[in-house]
Image (cartoon, rainbow, N blue to C red; front, side, top):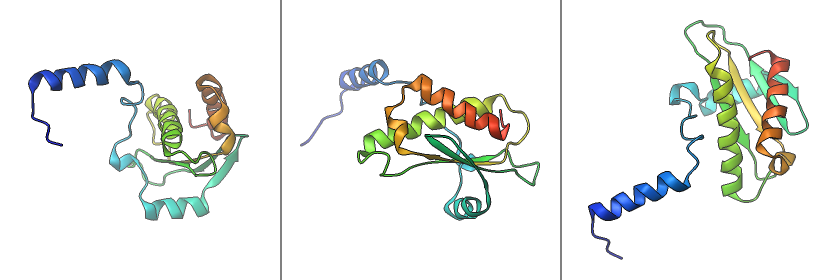
Length: 142
């Protein structure tokens, strides 16, 4: 199918995307240098301290260097939901919560890996936020 570029069509598409998308997640992305690489992930997954809640497991390791601002990763497995759309939606919500948490911190907070458990799909956004911040308070990051 061939679609010709038309400024009117582009404006309608942009207007639709701005009206019907939730922009709260778009403003909460970590930069690439703030996310874990695969090699770092396996290292910290093995050696980090674990904190559990009914719907989350948080793996935390403090940073040794002062120049590092902290690294994050969120894992939502297929056990949580078979649908990639639902898994990505949960991942964006958790990244948003992590971003809110990291905004108020001036000192480097270390490495955080959040593992989402299957019960998290049933929670509302408020319950998800409440439980997530309870786990984070155990670590005393925020």
